[in-house]
Image 1 (cartoon, rainbow, N blue to C red):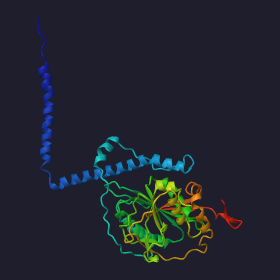
Image 2 (image 1 turned 90 degrees about the vertical axis):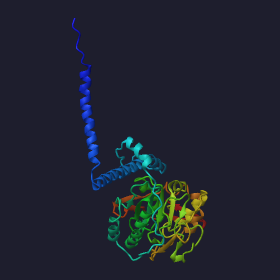
Image 3 (image 1 turned 90 degrees about the horizontal axis):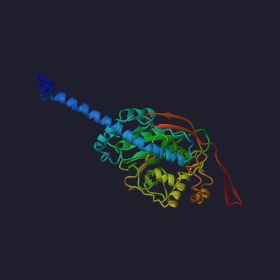
Length: 390
């Protein structure tokens, strides 16, 4: 009987030939690559570095927004926003494997390249000058927002500027502020909140409205409330998020660079989100000039928080001269301050009433026009008790 022919050796030979050919091709490609010019190798390295930075930026955005969406929703629910009013950025599509690979390669931003005492240009500018300056700024995303590239910023800050009819003052402030904040390596966004109409100015309502609208955009760690006429003189006065509420404008030229009184928090003031929620924001009752900042100081003290300040040698500001409107000062300021602590839970961020008339996103800032209604009616009962009609 004839034995069947064995074909194992043929199959092994059939598999080894293409595998060997593949290895020869790979070896030839590797040897050939080693003879590339230094210029070609540098181009390849630059492209790879750009891809890493692009992936890093995408990762940072994904981590920030995915972590912040729940927090923003909880804050807005705490403030009593109606369902469906949250307007957060749509999450990008992201590969979890890339996240796991990139996470250990991301570094926090190091020491900021600060200059110290600034050469102030307090001559009045216009918005065109500011936007021309910002077009030369790397990584500017418009809307008055900026973030450092290639590192993870430690703080995400929203600057709230209450505003009315001071275009030149605003441009002068932003002309100084944007380069300074970028040197501090902050991720930030500037909101200019303007009061609609000609009613009496209410700074507290505008600042509360600015916080609520900013939280619809991003998960900010803290807020800096900045008067439009206060120009910083030193970039070592950091606008980062403080451990406790921090009064930044300690030494102002108008007051001979001294602090007028210990509870002052007006001018430029920084506070974390959790602390701002704890004190329920600013009071909404101070129409006209003065009072809302002192009321905030009483709220901070009532919640057993501490007001901290940087050294006077760093926290220096120049104030642009201006005239107050005829309605100032606030006629019932003293009576309101006496009730500040008792009233704080019922008057503030959770009760502010306003309507956004329009919203414009310029290169240098996000502009919110806000209708806050009319002046509250008030009267004294028996010459002592203050009655306010909302």
